[in-house]
Image (cartoon, rainbow, N blue to C red; front, side):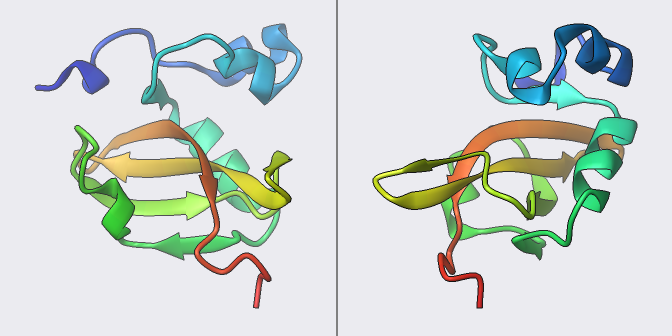
Length: 109
């Protein structure tokens, strides 16, 4: 088991107390384990910018990514490129926020 699977699992209650998702994850080490409820909420809020089994850029993650998505609306912009909250499913039943990712298709086409 990797260190990514250890530690507190963030819940919707934690999110509510924090006031916003960015505030919830601020200052925490990545990847951050979240409940399936958070994963589903972020997946369902808008059509995902990207959705798939994995990406080449995840090769260095300490997680066996089985599915990922970039939330459908950018959280911010860096160097004039949109940056998306990125979530993965791993170990069949565990869900993680892995940070902020640029889309492979920045025009959204």
